Image: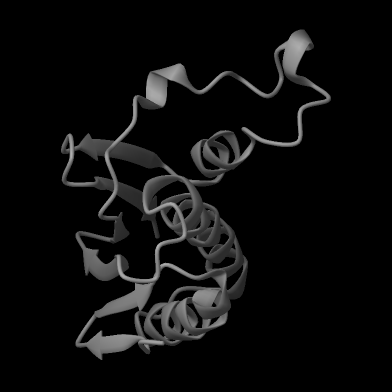
Length: 140
């Protein structure tokens, strides 16, 4: 099986949840290097884990031949993280709210909701047949 690749502020992993720990370690190191405080590191790490997990499972269908790439940067007092997969793309508007009465007992569908509540901005870029990129921003 392939291994994670790190170049500068970017890590690329095969589509397997086995590599979530590598992403977490990479991310925490970068965020601490940027001077991000512990409470924000936790919120950002939770958000990145949710998006990376979605990219692995839903985007790349857990195909280890496809990669998930995470790029971390700091700009104008904010941390920006872009997570990209190589899947077919999806419509984020089609994800139902987990707090809707009909969805309260569903076991899926909470990730994007959690990310939107923890981050200051969440932007989806859907490239049909060429994957999805999600950029999350947290102001410092």
